[in-house]
Amino acid sequence: MSEALDRLGRRFARLTTEAVVARPGLWLLFRGPLRAQFDRLASVWEGRLGPEALAPLAAALDRVPPPARALDLGTGTGKGARLVAERFPEAEVLGADLSPAMISTARRLLSPELAGRVTFEVADASRLPFADGTFDLVVLLNMIPFFDELARVTARGGALVVTYSLGPATPIWVPPGTLRERLAPLGFGGFEELQAGTGTAVLAIRR
Ligand SMILES: C[S@@+](CC[C@H](N)C(=O)[O-])C[C@H]1O[C@@H](n2cnc3c(N)ncnc32)[C@H](O)[C@@H]1O
Picture 1: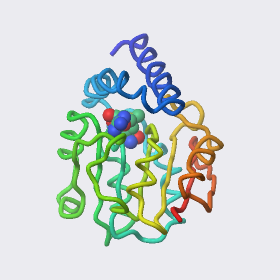
Picture 2 (picture 1 turned 45 degrees about the vertical axis):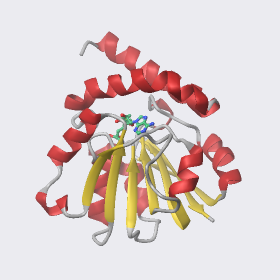
Picture 3 (picture 1 turned 90 degrees about the vertical axis):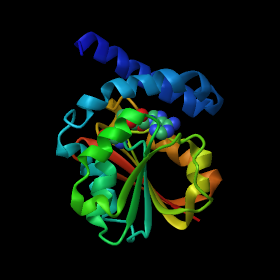
Picture 4 (picture 1 turned 180 degrees about the vertical axis):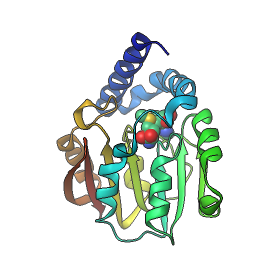
């Protein structure tokens, strides 16, 4: 992919994030183009950022209790889901993503050791096909938050981790203050902000 096209894609991802965080109803307009963008990127996504991209998620996972069921939302090629599964050997982990090509790649990259506990499925974070309170850990790694659904599927007492690998330079980026403002009225508290490597994480508990 040319550098110019890549830059355009990053701008579109940022525009989509800002629009949808401000007005979630706009997602209907952005959904198709964003899915097509990530379908196109699926074959090269895994090698895009190095292991340091996971530093903020790893730091946040040090601070959460071991979950029984965890969700990595906007999993892409499954990096976050694999890290959660490695960190918590008792957990069942689901990686969900809008892009069928990302999910196919995530399934292909899964090691036999993790295959019994980690599954991947196509799902839209704006309307998740999971019952209320299904997950006691929900992680977003470089992903647009859909706040109502995050509150709905996170179990009471469960943890939410929202991380951005390049901090404010991440194309999909939501400032920590905005995350707090939007999550607190939905029943999240105990906020912590972390920095690790080049990235940031916000950790919250669903009350
Ligand atoms: C920037 S990528 C991050 C992928 C992965 N978490 C990582 O950091 O390597 C964002 C991912 O979120 C997915 N995504 C965007 N909007 C979504 C939605 N509404 N529901 C589910 N996945 C979504 C995209 O398809 C893409 O795979």
